[in-house]
Amino acid sequence: MSAGRGLPPAHDDAPHPRDGIAPTSDRRLPYPQPDIPWRRFVALGDSFTEGLWDPPPGEAEHQRGWADRLAAALTARVERVDARQFEYANLAIRGRLADQILAEQVGPALRMKPDLVSLAAGGNDILRITCDVDALLATMEEAVRRIRATGADVLLATSADPAKSPVIRRIRTKAAVYYLGTWSIAQRHGAHVVDLWGMRALRDLRLWAPDRLHLTGEGHRRVANAALVALGLEPDDPDFAAPLPAVQPAPLATRAREDAAWARNHLVPWVGRHLRGQSTGDGRTPKRPAPAAIVPQRAGR
Image 1 (tube, helix red, strand yellow):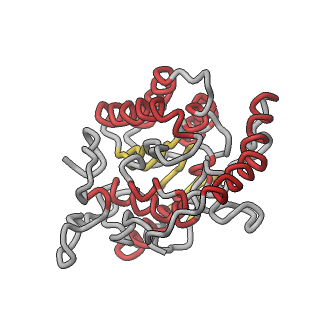
Image 2: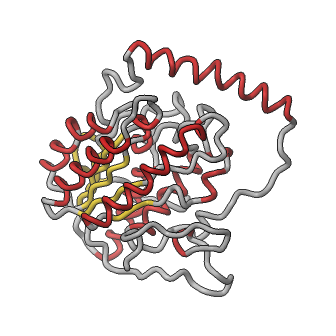
């Protein structure tokens, strides 16, 4: 079974190859180095794929994110052996729901004739109380079916495990159903999967931005390496899934102040936008609307 395909892995405390951790320090990771078959990559989705918080908002005109990092890593590998240019487009827009992504992004992406398409969506749907996970999975499967019908490879991403999130863990059951459904879709259609749920390092809140919904730049870097593994490639950083150095937990009073600040600065505005039917993505356009070359850079940086 190739990396990233088939049934979801069992998760326990033992190192797993998909975590990017070698069983012993003197053994190389068991990833082959095949030729890179893709020359045009299009990324679809919401804020996760747009790259929100990498860098933090306001520090750059466009966010970077795991998909940009993956495209740069693939570009570097292609250019070592092939003079043909590797092209990349990113149609993801923050706040988009799965049915919006299917309606607004899949068609334009397919007109670009990609041979690799990433589709990471569903997070905004799952956060909603009214979310029907079965309907969400049906929408995702329709998108995967349309893309695979063109012969393009598909890279999906599961939800991350919200077990350590003080608030979002309340939707963990819905997220788990979506996680399993994503693997089932991948198995039926031969898609690759970035197993974010299985990346135990992502349970560390230090890899999450102050809004607790999006990854930091370091989190995006790790996901880009996980995406390389999902595609059957060696990661740029073999320790990408290793946990962060342990630290002493903050005092209870400090955590309470942080939770209050988060609710005031992030939760209340999010609820307000939701009640008004507004989205942070309203009026926004894709940051990379057409396939173009990208400056090579390692996902491990």
